[in-house]
Every structure is written in C-alpha cells, then in structure tokens.
Image (cartoon, rainbow, N blue to C red; front, side, top):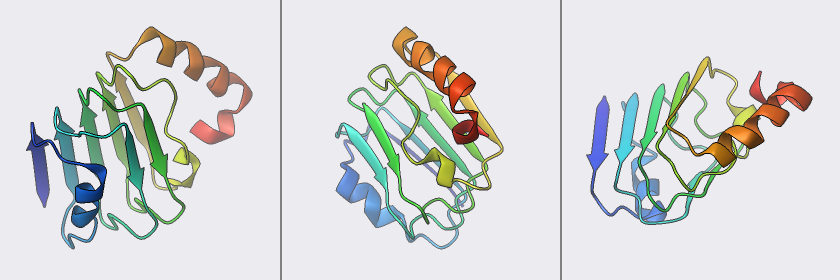
Length: 124
C-alpha cells in the first residue's frame, strides 16, 4: 500500500514498472531518480492517493498525461531545486485536494505566483 524509494538510482522507464501495482496508495521518491523528467503516463497509478517527490537532484520537469494519477489527492513537491514550474498537466488531476510546496527554488516561486493569478483554473 505504501512504497518509499530512497537512493535507488531509478530511471523514469523503471518507474513505469510501478504504475500497475494494484494496491499502491502512497509513493515517496527521495534522492533516487536519475532522469530530468518524470512522466506519468495515461492509465498509470490508478489508486495512488499520495505522491511525495523529495530532493530529486536532476528533476527539471514533471509531465502528467490525461488519465494518469486518477485518484491522486495529495502532491508534495519538496527540495526539487531544478524544477522551475508546476507539473505540466496538473489540471488533469481532478481529485487533487492539496499541493504542498516545501523548500523550492526562488525561480519556482516566482513562476507559480503569476500562474496562480492569471491562470488560476490550472491550480483550482
């Protein structure tokens, strides 16, 4: 039900092997992603409710396809120092109730404020 991966050296392709775990509700990735992009593809992680992304050193973009992460209610973005904007496709997460942003770079904060003001529908 809960999987925490730390210092794994996991590639995005390898992460896709987890997307069909039938009872996975909570996923925590910390220090372990090798790639620059984290792509959640359509049909993956059906029951996932909580996603914690913490201190992924190379991560500079997150992509969420329509039909991915259908049950996600909570997203935590923490110490993702190369991430400069909100995940592309976040508007597809219809059940998302809370996005927690902790210790993010100033550039991320500077970009998210205008998005919140001008395109609030993305964050709503």
